[in-house]
Length: 479
Image (cartoon, rainbow, N blue to C red; front, side, top):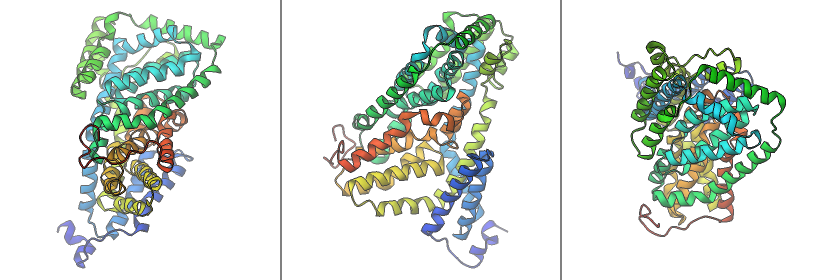
């Protein structure tokens, strides 16, 4: 007997129906309550809470006339859209493990402890991560390589890890938002119907003040940081432990150079990372004297440090594809929830309700911001938080005579850079797992990530930086 034949809705001849507003909003309320109480206060596993929220959405989907197989198809389609990002996450695990085994990350940490002043650590971290992510267009690659090294330096300098991770994440997402090499930067103008370089220039209205605001916060926070005696002793001990366990040589920069070259040349991400990891394994054997089996195992199970210094061993025992399985599991659970609410039309109902109140430019921008954040929270996907609101709101922007680049800018302000602040999103779980700092601990310090959409709201209600529509085909430059 087929699933359709077993379904009461099918047996009674009842067709699928559109959800009411209350039915559409119920899964959003459920996930908000489950995660805020269960994850935020009771510290329950996010995977279980996300599956529970997906179950709530599934029960409502059944009430709407959907069979289990149809809900399952929505889940599978949602997971399929996120698979490229999850594949990168897994490969980054291999990259981290092999770079540590080769001595690349330990060398960067040791030299960073010598060169970076505690007072300017946050500013330096922010500037370097912003530049590298802008050049490469990858937030994951920036955080998974330089970010790991900067966390190690923060350990040695006595910098609060929440502050350090916040500066890393904000800097990494600066490039993810503005770089022409970034996938989300290219996706936003496609969804909204604008031109890529017009979109990038228009984002400077919101990104520039948000970025400088973050820089000011890090500069002020750094003024209260000094190199006290305890911190100095810790830094010296960490350097001694690293230098005692690893040999340093300029050739250890080769894995980083390969990754940077592949990103600048816009080569496929995963092959470039795998090549870098393979070279790192060779260097681990040739330079560090590692045996073949442990060196290769660092790709899968990560590197296990045994320097005798607890801080260094905690810092360097990480990486490997297996370490990213927790990230992947949470992503699967989040996509299960997102797949159901999208497949059953619940998300469409919520977004259409937002459109009804968008009677002015300010309200339209505000509705776009809310829609992007809600989509991000419900799906955990930066792609969906851009695509769905972008496609839905594009006609409304045209009707009001507003350039499509206003829409594409707002989707990035409230979609792309907000993702790492959501603990159950792929980005949030990845950043927390890679840097070893909980999302809620670094989120307040990722200043640029939550101030961009505030400037978008300000401009929407004041008219500052809002461009009028000039041509029918806004995909052409200068539109």
